[in-house]
Every structure is written in structure tokens, then in C-alpha cells.
Image (tube, rainbow, N blue to C red; front, top):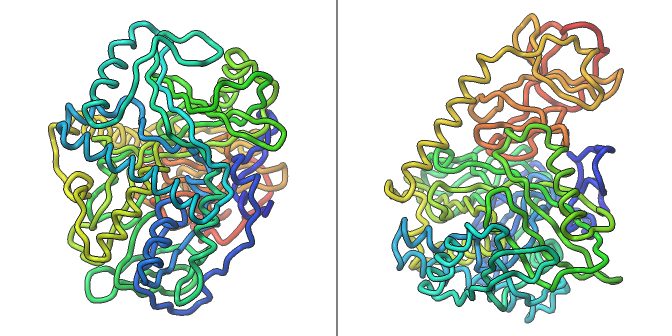
Amino acid sequence: MDAGRREYIREEVSLPGRPVSYWIDTTDPEPLEALAGTTVDVDVAILGGGIAGITLADELKRLGASVAVIEMRRVGCGVTGHTTAKITVQHGEIYADLEDAHGGEAATLYASAQKAALEHIAETVAWRGIECDFERAPSYLFAQNEASRESLEREAEAAQRAGVPMELLDNAPLPFPTTCGVRLVDQALFHPLRYLLALADGIPGDGSHIFERTRALEIDGHEGRGIVTTDRGLVRADHIVLATHYPFYDKAALFTRMHAERSYALAVDLAEPPDAGMYYSSEEGGRSLRWHPVADGGLAVVAGEGHKAGQGGDERERYRALARWAGEHLGADSVTHHWSTQDNHSVDRLPFVGQMPGTPTVWVATGFGSWGMTNGTVAATMLAGRIAGTASELDDLLSPSRVNPGASAKSFLRENLDVAAHFVGDKLSSPDKVPIDQIPIGVGRVIAAEEGRVAVYRASAAEVHTLSPRCTHLGCELHFNIAEKTWDCPCHGGRFTAEGMVVQGPPVRDLTRKTESGDDAPTAGPAKRPTGGAL
């Protein structure tokens, strides 16, 4: 496996399994070119090489457009490479909520779009002959508490009204007790990166490009052709699409209407696997699992332990809790891989897909929740049509400009109060006064120093990284993620390596590095300085 696909991941020896997504660990594509300090002209520039960006590029190229995909790291190694890869129309208890908040027609439109996305993936796999372990399987919602039966009955009834034939069961076919289940047949599982990389293979050529290891920094989309400024050159296009998970160019103030949530996954070996399918707990703090076939049998992907980004406490305990659950409930023999992911959840549970307000050349796709395989495909096919001049029946429902106070007011207020609490409260809290040489190896902390608060990561006795603790998006104070060795923003989910380089947007600028004199310096690479007392 190409080490570049794991460039920001560090070993945490106390955790079970390899610290890498199973999907990334079992693919090894040839690296693609970076933008080579030039200006490239295309019809459409697409920022982000995940399921939405690559599917959109594939669709547009088939329609005759030239495209340039701009990816900060490697294709698929962001959110798509860390998914649990469930292709399903069953998105937790969503249809009852959509019906209440947006009306029955909205729930039906959402269901129809998800079904179309599932079939789009299935048909693409079939006609291209993509070897990605695609398999039809049922999806289940399940509960372990009798009190949850009423809400699952409500969801099944709302789903049926929306045209999704869910079936209520007395239990789910799992090796531990359940009190209720809701089954939806003919859903699907696959290896997401093998699928994505097969699509990506057909994009370069005939005036189209994929630029890896190229970071978009600025967008000018107001007049004439749009311009994307990157760290390696310019891309000019008639249309620009932000498929970057969390858009850094945000004329719709989407950051006030979404929150970033992290969750954790393990790949485990099972002596007695469950029936092939997807299983998702309807209860708070619950788990999900899915079976995946491999050459000598199979493994299960177990996920859960979700929390808001930058607010997870000791993230290592999240993995350990999942491992304990897998052993107790599934009889897991061993953990082969562990990884985490990050999803953007909108306040009204619908994605944001469409034109960025006031910028006719800029489009956005984000807010997919935990269901990026279908929502990302919905966004891609919808935007391909919109760019080609075809309206969509989803335009109003998913518009980034939509206003529906009745559907989102409480969530909007709650999320923004939480952001405000961290934006202000973290800056007023007392930083650690521990000397640098007393910070444990492999740990980062925000400490007090002569020039103010400083983020310090102690990589070894001889290697210390001293950084600004402020996210370069809007200035919230970062929290150290001890499991991933990253600095995470509790406001909008931006993430940086221990050395201060951007891992995940919305920030596009690296953290500034603190020098011994207390001045700031750009983060141009690993900064090493001898340890001592306080900075």
C-alpha cells in the first residue's frame, strides 16, 4: 500500500488492529499527477476526490464536458475511504422526521432520489464490470429496548408512505437479543474504493484531469469564468463545484447550519458471522455493523461511538469500547483494522446540493450525514444535470439557500450555541501550565507560554512541534485527538496534523508555527526543537 495514502496517520500501539481503514489498506493505486505550476482550462473544476466529486466528474465527462478534479491528498482517502460503505435507502429513522418537518411530498422525493442513487451504483458496477465486491443484501434497523418499538413502527409506516417498503419484525437476525427490527430488502454492500478508483481511471485524458496532492486555496466565481487558486497553479472553468465535504468557500453560511460528527469503526474477524446485510441501531449510542466477504471467509465492520468533532474526550476509549462490544455481542476473534471518519449533519437532515447563493458559476454538495454513498451519488447526478442545463425536482428541497425555520430552528440554535461556547469559552479557560518536557511522548496539549497559548505536540524526547492553537478557519481553539494524533476543531470540524498541516476542511491554511522567540512562522514542514521547561 502506498504510504502516501496514510500520510497523516500515526501508530497508536495501545489500540487494536492496524490504524488504517480496511478499504484504503486493500487498495494500492498508482499516484496521479499534481498540478504542475501552470494554468489549466476546463469546462468544470471539481474540488474533492470522493464519492460525490468522482461520480460527478464521471457523469460530466460522459456528457462531453472537460473536467479537472482537485484533490488535496489522494483520490478516495478522505471521507469516502473511511466509510462503512452501506448503499441503502434506509437512513436510520429519517422518513418520519422528514414527513413531520418537510411534509410527505419531501419524504417521497428524498426516498425516490436515494433509490435512484442505489440503482445508479448497481448499474455502473454491472455495465462496467467493476470488481468491487458488490452484493445485494437487506438492511435492518434494530432496537434492544422495548421502549423503542413505537418509534420504529412510526418509521416503518412513514417509509411505506414515502414508497419505501420497510417491514416491521419482532427482532433482527443478530447473535444477540433485539426487541424489534425494520427490514428493507434488496439494498447493497461494496468495496467503496475499488468502485471509486474504477471510475477515476476513466477521467484523465481528452482534456480532463485529476490532480492529486493539490490544495485549493481560493475561489473567484463572481464574473465570467471561475478561477480556482491552488498551491500549485490555477484552474479556470465555466463551473466550479465544491465537493470537499465541508466547503471552505461558503456564501450560504452553511457552517451555521451543519455540525461535524466523528465516529469510529473496526474490522473484526468473526467465527460465526451474522447473515449478510447491514444493521443499524436506532437507539442513542448504538452500533452499526455490516458483513464484508473476503477470500478466506469474511469480516464484519463494526461502527459507532459518535460525537461532535473536537469534543470526544480520550478518543482511544472509543475504539476500546467498540472492541469490547464486538467481543461481547459478536464473539469477535480479533480486530484487524481500526479507523475513524467524519460526517457533516445538517440541521434539517437534508443535504445541501445546488448553486451557491450569488455565485452563478459555483455549486456545492455537502451535508450528507452518515449516508454518503447514496447522498453523494444523488448530489453528483443532480449537479451533472444542473450544469448541463436540466432542472431537478430536488432543486428546492436540497437548495443551499433554503429556509425552513419550522424544520430546523431548534437544531440551528443548539448547534450555534455550542459553537459559541467553544469559540469564547475555550479561549477563556485556563491552559495547562505543564513544562514541555513533562508532556508525555505522543501527546499534544495547549499550554501557557510567555507569548500566550501554544499548541504543543511532543513526538519524541528530541522532537517537539509548537503551533498556534487557533483553527485557521474562524479561530476556534483546537483540541488534541490522541488516537489520531491530530488537532481537531470543536466548532466546524477542521483538522490538522500534529505538525500543523491541514487534514480536513473547512480550513485551507496550515497552522502557524511558534518559534523560540515567540514569533509566528509558516508551517513548511516538521519543526523540531529541543525540549526544556516552559516555552
